[in-house]
Length: 319
Image (cartoon, rainbow, N blue to C red; front, side, top):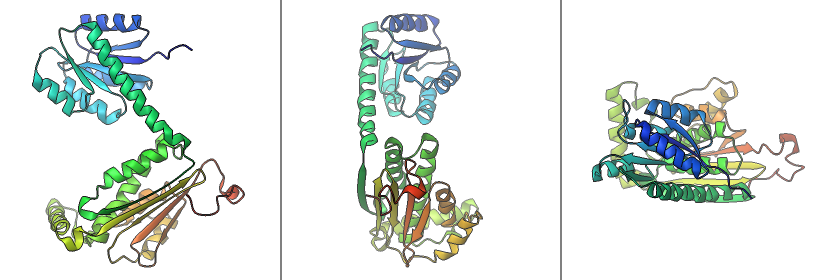
């Protein structure tokens, strides 16, 4: 079985470096693309979806190598970057690692050393991809989290759930970010309007009001009466259906006022409305408990049509 050729992008303003690295890695059966500056590097990185990793000089003209690294990590999170510096400087190495580089090498370098770094990083990426692929074979999964409000990070929780839905094949790449943002907004609502009892009307539209809101938020997070309340997240998944319940320990709210706008596509973007607006575009069903401090989102799987759910044995709850 032939080895799959890995595609590397090399970004350096020295043509000699580009030529040496390209010739060497091509002789090792890699595919190599070249860029002499960060702008060209980003163009290639965005245009070539099969690039497995990037080797970039720190001292690039125009946009620096560190800035290029930051942008690359934001736009191509899964693509590892190895940085090259012309100075044997600990500061440069620390800066590169802090900003997301997987490794660094210094000029002058030996090609064998660069090769070892590339192989190490690609081996790490392969293992990471293999770990993520295990979710493709998930037939069912149930997870429950009960997190104190003062420790709850909506971004971390929503990232985990959205990534699971992506890797399991339940949602496509173009839906992944919608799920991430919708879940995050829902958790934020549970924290701020639920457990911390912060009415959205006090936030206002100007900087002064926003700062007052944030100051009150911090005070309530430090207050055990509010900060110790739990955010409870429950997810149930199978190939036919995914359901997610997010509950808080707050007083609840009059949720019926928010269902009619969703049905009419007249979304209220204030308070809970912003989360509803995002959720509305990715889910099939939304429901609340009577108190209004628990919301359940349900999405039917793409592999089974809605009219076929009961025939396929998916008429009950997921899990």
